Image (cartoon, rainbow, N blue to C red; front, side, top):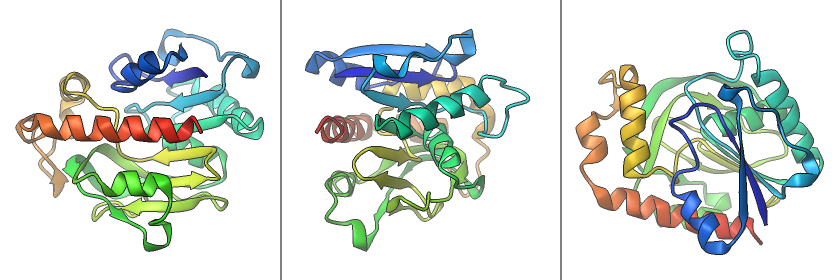
Length: 229
């Protein structure tokens, strides 16, 4: 499979997914929007992975590449490409599908559990997520669920955490791909977000348990394998 990622800042790449791509023998290309890259031709990839970033989906005036990126994501979905969005990526997908993206009541940063929606408990990805004691969060915004999507999971801090459309499109507000290295990069580059509010952990709390990273990266591998089906 030919995989293409959309990256918004240098410190938020596909993380542990790179190992899954390499192990499976698939190809990987990336559009670095912050470098001035252009979107690829739709015919050049099969799976699109839209990554996170500190900007908001409506910050087109600050980041002029957001408008063409949203157009590109919409075209990829309409063309039947498989698309997975993580954090900002999930918000961008929701936006192009007609759902609102707004400031969440709480900033959510660190390791917090998910609550799997009862009517989604039999979904293969929901089963994967149910195995995670915690997932990693770093966000202040939230998405509404697109009208054609199914909600898979919530958390105490944020009602909408994951959605799916027909095993073609997935949106995850949280991160399964985060490694120790990428978490450290987030802490370095976005330290101002660690404001000690209700659902914001300290840098020390985020980094103290290596097993958390191992567990979410295992779940990321399982989600990736589901996307390949």
